Length: 172
Image 1 (cartoon, one colour):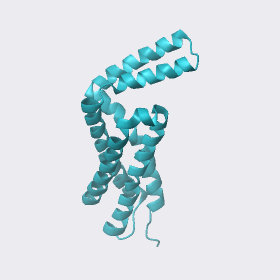
Image 2 (cartoon, helix red, strand yellow):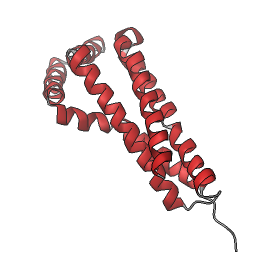
Image 3 (cartoon, rainbow, N blue to C red):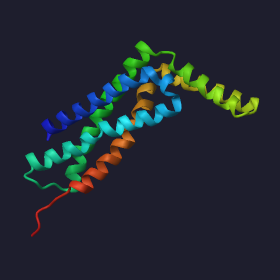
Image 4 (cartoon, rainbow, N blue to C red):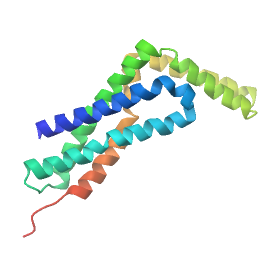
């Protein structure tokens, strides 16, 4: 299982990191709102390797049969490797190329509130939340933890779906 998990986990992680590196620098041109859609689409695409890796493990290592539990184990390990690449890519991009990302995103949220005619209290609350978020992002450990929560739920869902679709046991 180790070879399949590592191979497909690295493929998923490299594709995730590459798509992030290709899109994040252009987030303001894409638009922060559309950027979320683009980002999660990239995550889903990269996590398709969970399905392909689990299928490869079933077909090439286990002789075409796999239980839900074994498929889940392979899929979640692929997901964890992919998430590690995603987090590492974000930390490199954030700290080396976009340390002002938090400021720019907070400014975007404040300008959206102003455009919607929000009260000054709502705007002040958003400014405070932006400052709190910047403090979280300044600490690499909390930044990594928050970043991990972006792809992991998607990977968990992909793992559950793949495990259910691919389980195949010998019939007696």
